Length: 413
Image 1 (cartoon, rainbow, N blue to C red):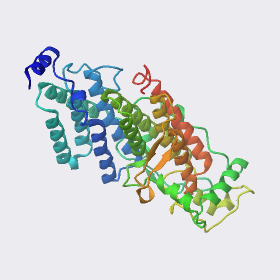
Image 2 (image 1 turned 90 degrees about the vertical axis):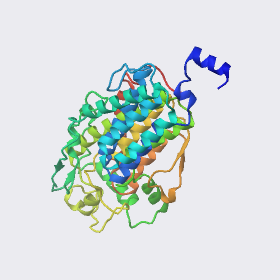
Image 3 (image 1 turned 120 degrees about the horizontal axis):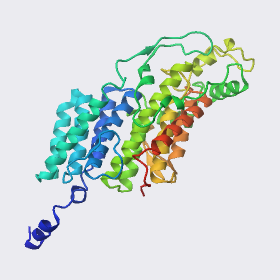
Image 4 (image 1 turned 180 degrees about the horizontal axis):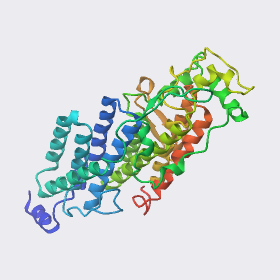
């Protein structure tokens, strides 16, 4: 080190970690590990959303505790004012993942050690890492009794309009939210009555657009693009991925990047609760059952087709109303638009289930959410009224999250 450089360092102190080492993107790197964990464990959409939220709340509170810019999401500071925020991010995320995914502890330990080594041996790195580890541990402890376990199921139903199979994960209807006050306020009214005109119109649409008997390559490709089955990052993960990609393209500084992913994943996790409550409450049948048994619905405008099959290849594993893909997509799109104060941010993205891995381009977040919702009709898995209700639910949850103390104070650019 030159003498002049040494004088500057002595006078001004070390260069902040985020400025000296922009190549270490702790938020994105550790979220990629979380996405991989969800794929590997074939986690449900609800479990995935909870994991993403816990990791990103920990990362945000770790960074915010060192350089406070907003209210904490869960764990208040203060952290060490001279702690390295990148080290805090790494250690906080590590503390969450080793507890939620213990089968891959060795992988997470090795990544933490490598990341901290890249940050160097300055005492600020050790202080930041110690603080981040404490934050991550406290996030996990705070969520230990949030009702996400044990797993509960709703038994199979019977009769016209009722979902026929048993489905698990219904404990999420009582899970403690991350950011909204009361998820129940976002539960919509019931689906249209089986003998109504609106039901008949939605029935006719999905019977045509969602039929496996009609070869429509474009509709099939759109359905597959957003299908995101078990073994993928799940719908919440795709919106997290979109957020990470857009924030990287816009070169957000670490505090803003951590705030964005915390807001996004809290909204997605809280959307889970309202979505599961709605499904559990109404237990509405899927189009496959509805069309095959239309002679029982009491509606003279619906026509039974006992051999009808959904383009998706399966009827769906949970009650039909509302569409969870739609609610997650609307929540994700609304948070991103609210964070940047505009929806008009063009982006390209390839989902985990994109045919041949080919990306699609969108003029903004809302357009992607709209396509994701409609894809469920194209797959024959949802009626349009369930798509619309899901989009409304997700947007409403996002609106409350954006009105909270983690976001108040302006938009990122």
